[in-house]
Length: 481
Image: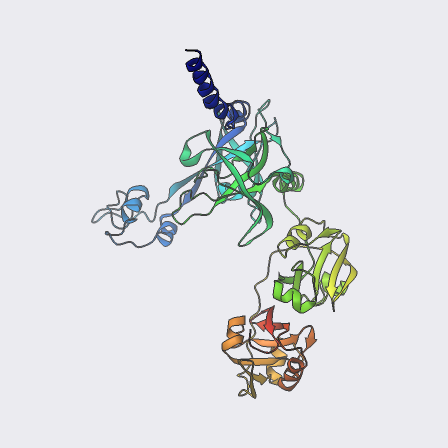
């Protein structure tokens, strides 16, 4: 009997140890209780004319799966009766409009009613309504919005409001738990949780925001809501999702709160956002390009063109330079540069380090103010002369005087055809090769000499003009890569 009791105790102990040592999932209840009241629902209305609507809506066949959606949720489509349409013999009152509505989220950052949200939530709104968790509603005033970062600041007339606390996104760790509160599909104060999937993400057309990527469930209506860490601090604003269906697929992106707060302070103070610029077009430094330029590793931002008379030009920065540091901050990747330059006050004199001819150089640049982008000018020019040489998989021809004048270049060779190694490297018909490893190319003959003088198998950087833009393309000197 004693032995049986010992066996039972041992079995019980063995079963209990794994249970006691198993890590528990975090409890979000206290965070939600303390911070949930500072999260608000934002609804907007916009007057839309029926003519404008008809221009925006797609023409769908009745068998199309989206037909039923538009029939039910979009008012008075061409395929359904229009109660506002006059009958026979009645005068036509003209096109009538309706109120388009949208929903989003936001959070209170000051007790006197300042609220942060996304710019796209309140974009083009005629009226913005904020509803608190206690069901009170207020008409909000738009203080300002910045489309580049998708941050907006609005204000309601109220006092003693609950507010959020800001955290430090720099201290976030990949794998750390985070919580979103918002109004997906209009369901107020919905709580979802997940982890930080990555930091410093760059998205297309979003050069000024190092996004926080999470797997927190975010859906339409969550936009503008806060992303909390487990200490109950806001570390980001939920802004975008990656989806092929329109719904959540495990990839959501938040604007770091330090970026958003900087924008909010400028909007509150001046009503607009100012950013710095230095007048360069850049591209990433690949491993092949790094080898061609003699860099120890792929880092920095490669300058492929410099605005004539711009800040970089005046500072002595040249096409082919690799920017390694800006204002003492390392530029690890090309996407880092727009962020640090954009965050610099216009008029500031900044130290900048570039890599040129296999050596680092220190320069000084005076940052200008970024204005709206101007559309690039497309180079035209007359038809090139017939190809004068075929080498490295490229049919090459010297530029005519008319082409040089149009492109505003003194030399270069026209690529009439590209196949084999050249095509695989990314060279296309119509490209103009302007340089080889920062040495200007004046003619086809000179280009051949430069390439023949390179060590066979070495990666060289070809400066290529394509349309209105320039870029560097890595290419093996023997043409076999």
